[in-house]
Amino acid sequence: MFTPNFLTANDKSGAYPESYYAASANAVAGFETLAENATCDVVVIGGGFTGLSSALHLAERGYDVILLEAHRVGWGASGRNGGQVGSGQRREQDELEEMLGLEDARKLWDIAEQSKDIVKSLISRHNIDCDWKPGILHADHRQRFVKGTHEYVDKLRDEYGYDQLRSVGRDEIRDMVGSEFYHGGSLDMGAGHLHPLNFALGLADAARKAGVRIYENAQVTRYETGEKVTVSVKGGKTVTGDMLVLGCNGYLDALDDRVARRVMPINNFIIATEPLGDDLARELIRDDVAVADSKFVINYYRLSADKRMLFGGGETYSYHFPKDIKSFVQPYMLEVYPQLRDVKIDYGWGGTLAITMNRMPYFRRVEPKVFSASGYSGHGVAMATLAGQIMADAVSGTMERFDVMANIPVPRFPGGKSLRYPLLVLAMTWYSLRDRL
Image (tube, rainbow, N blue to C red; front, side, top):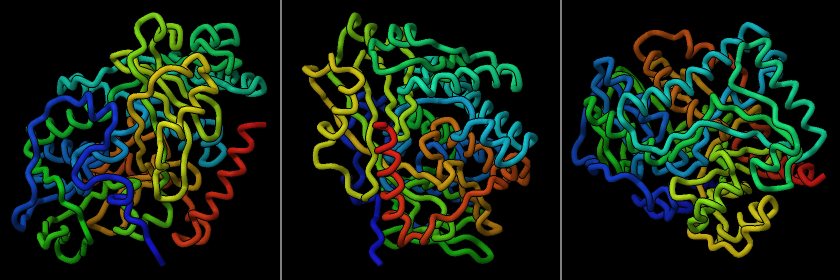
């Protein structure tokens, strides 16, 4: 069976994609390549939010940590995503209550609140310049969705004590986003948005200062467990440690089949317009919040620091990116903002994230010495960052939060790895059609 390698399928080896984020990245001193075999206490695979946060928090606990990144730190989804730091889990609380019971649903809400707090805390503590701004507007593209959205606002206020969320009506939302595409929604000022690559680079710099040895262009080919964990790197070098943390998310696929049966990579795409100027930018998103809408194949967008529209939309379920990403995403943007038809698009890029069957993250201790967290399903900026701290706790022997996450039932994809793609395409085709109804 052919297994695509998402590390090499769509991008140049060792180079960031030609994205707005890469073009506006902060200058950070480079990281070394692995020149000889090495040993440490904990090996971390993956230089995204999960791996960087794990490495940083482990080093702060006194562990000798080596982090291995196949390309560049923040190269994957962590440096390419929509930058939204949302509240709650990927599933809403009433769904989690039905799935897991009220007690565990409340624990998951508390963990999700901690995920936002840790992002803001890390930005403050390490002086990370990543354009943090408060606010996410959840926009309903169907009138029939608005009642449920407003009822959910009331639920979170009355049952969870969350007072940062308020209902938004039709007239107000159309004024807030300069579009007639939406009928209402909710505004969450406890959430926010940021420049994800600069956040990742800030975490990497903080981890290095804490003593983490970070090696770029260190593609892991396999790992073996025994008395120690031995990680093999392309080119023949090895890293040996007492414990291993897998923070690979959408790029893990062939490294651990036990995780890959439940976590599947998919591709998502973003465009960035030319700078729009203050007046047009304010017309489009009046309050400079991020926006995420109610379509199953979600539109998500916000303004950059230099007043570009950063618009994410569309997914593909093959491993190849579209040949022309700008043309692929532009129709989704014009459906919301037809007034941007003549605006130049400066950047278009894709990235590989990971989803699970029920859209809840997959935390597991896959072996006594191996911890894994992945499958954030588009909700990973905050949760992946917290996952790093949670796995650092687990390596240190504090399992409480890890066990809460690991106890979430995450089913295997039907048909295993061989059939998950065609079955997902069928399902997503249906949901895409439903978005149009």
